[in-house]
Length: 89
Image 1 (cartoon, helix red, strand yellow):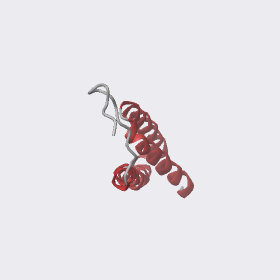
Image 2 (cartoon, helix red, strand yellow):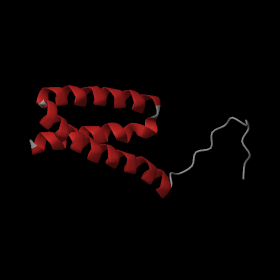
Image 3 (cartoon, one colour):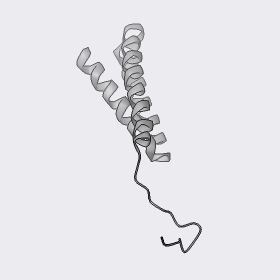
C-alpha cells in the first residue's frame, strides 16, 4: 500500500450504510415534523403565515446545507413536507 506523500492528503473512502442512515434519518424527521408543524400552523394562524414560515425554513436549511453539504437532504425533506401540505390542503 502506498503511503500518502503529504500528511494532509485526503484519502477517499466509500460511504458505509451508517453514513447513509445518518443522512436519511434526519431528513425523514424534518419531513414528518415539518409536515405536522405546517399543518398545525395553517390551523392556528392561516395559510399565509404558514407559507412565510415554509419559505424562511427553506432558506435557513439552504444556508445550513451550503455550510455542510452532508445536510443537503434536510432541505429536500423540508421541500417534501411543504409539498405534502399542499397536496393535503
